[in-house]
Length: 157
Image (cartoon, rainbow, N blue to C red; front, side, top):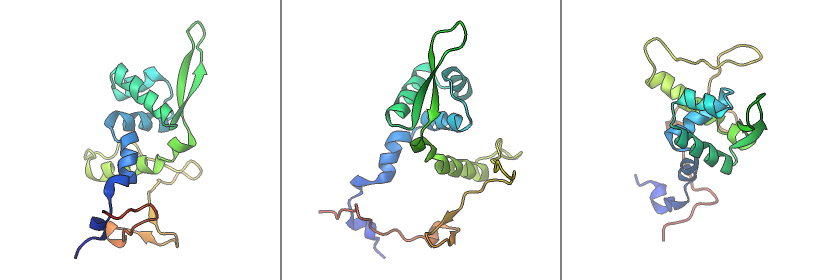
């Protein structure tokens, strides 16, 4: 059976567009730290192990893309510096981070279990990622999903 996707141009792919912004190891590690409440450059550098120049570049890119914002601070006796905080656009990546973490917990974790467990702040129950359709049906597999051309799809010439 021939896939419908062969008739459409993949050049306007939003997966590719998203990966052009966040699809790199250091970027995801910076986002991981931001979601964990790490905001300062030196702390991020220590926790990610990123070279200073790489980290500086990734932070600048995330600020330019509107995923992080700079917030000035000054410790007593020190020069002014910036913290990096997630914006609404950055917070929108939380399900992506949780999905990567969940996949890693299942397929790449040490036998001792995952190093981090996410829990609901209000009740303490473990957080689980769940894919549902607009009518509320839980989807347990990619085999339950049918991709179809969207309004932005363009046929191959």
